[in-house]
Length: 265
Image 1 (cartoon, one colour):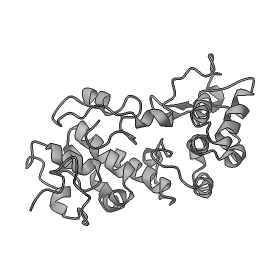
Image 2: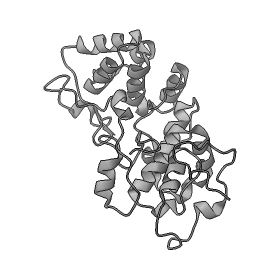
Image 3: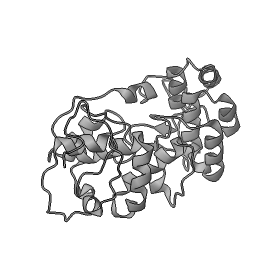
Image 4: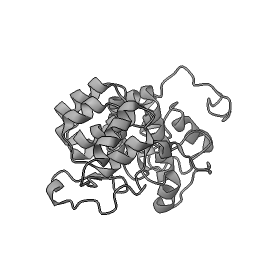
């Protein structure tokens, strides 16, 4: 059978899933190399590479991207998450939210950081999300800045956060985003509650976070930057540090990776 990803530039997604469990649970030493076609198939949401749980990090980035960009891929992989690292659960949950469904999340390690790229959910979805998971209020506020949901943003009663302000500025073509930006920068004090580089949100220590000293300084991984790609290189057993560096400048660590498309990292 011809590999559906063999034509990297022109192939169309076939009408089949990847529910062959041999692909999901191959013996650890059965496959020692990962081909370009396997990675492209994962990027495009066609199927998982063999033995993805122990694959090199650059191969995992392809799978994480495929999940984030392809709702059907995320839905197919969900029943198998127990056998995969937790970053796969987070990115499936992110994709589920962006597809306007509220996932069951059993602990903080399953809560995604980025829930606004490549898609935004409906305002009603984000409202239901924060009602069920109030600890996600800053992620929802950030999504509001992307989508222009200034009404919902006002309901969240967040501290003025510089990352949300920069995100709103980046999406100021939406009147609601511009309104969020104007509201935040009009405040005499602003904070950096969200940390894109470590994917952390200072919820428990919110009162201990010092005010942002330099205001808006352009170091937020705003949505437009998440569409920037790296040149595709052949997959292999490079170090995890190098793979993370190639995966994405900002958000390529072990969570939701807005990363790459076929032919590029």
